[in-house]
Image 1 (cartoon, one colour):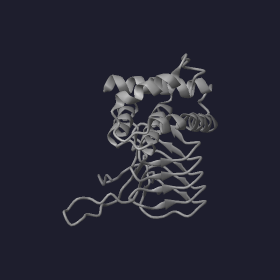
Image 2: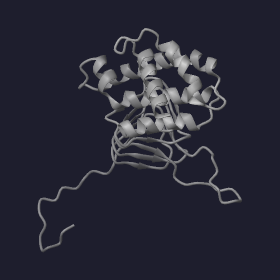
Image 3: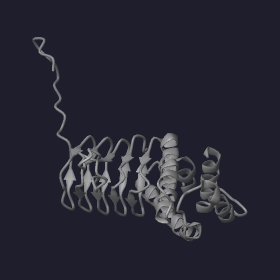
Length: 239
């Protein structure tokens, strides 16, 4: 299965970014490999129809990074070097498989492949809009029921997670919406945890090292408390 997934993602990369990964027939290679996935319930023809939209959205993701990171020298650098693009390509492929009827196991294997490669963990059921930028990316976690709008940027170490769980009568956790909603034009800086089914309003900035478990209205700026600088300690008082 590893070789099959490796080949699928190689051909997806060729299809989405043909100017940098040329192939004589990437679309045909994807079509031919789909039966080998053994993805129960998958409508292969429906998936093939999603490929242009995956390519379009990935193009917006590259643009989002190029507009937000002054370290970028070219689109080629983003496509070949940025782990966020690799992780999002895997996510968009896995999400499309789910949308075309595939049981969750193969999509999960695809996103876990990206997780092992990049340190970015995106559940394939999450809903992510266009112009999505991941900067650096290591340690990002996006939970299953997360919803992310358009023009959202996440930095390394961001967690979109659940705060707690509800259980059924058998003591099994209920699979209900439990992860955050990030509206359009939201930026979340490094090592921030946003937990629970809360909404971060559009055009908001969430600073680094913030622990957030309540709704945030649009146009908000949420920052951690400022560090206190003590020049010296006296009398052995320490911290």
